Image 1 (cartoon, rainbow, N blue to C red):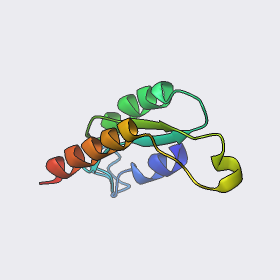
Image 2: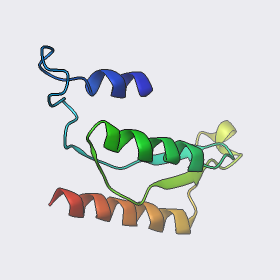
Image 3: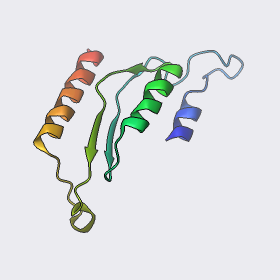
Length: 98
């Protein structure tokens, strides 16, 4: 992901490295699904990086843990409170786009 953001955040006009990129002023939010680890450290990096590459960050970010049986069943089960957080995140993103 870091390499993708690095390349996409480079100026479109290579003669002006301070010029706008393909990501310039784009609206973005971040969601994470991880195995038992807190997404706080990842979110901290995105909160620093995304504004630096001139993206418009929409909070909140949402982290969801992977239920242990998902590794065998292939089925992610998301708790109701996390579904509500994801819904609020989607609403915030849509509001920022309008």
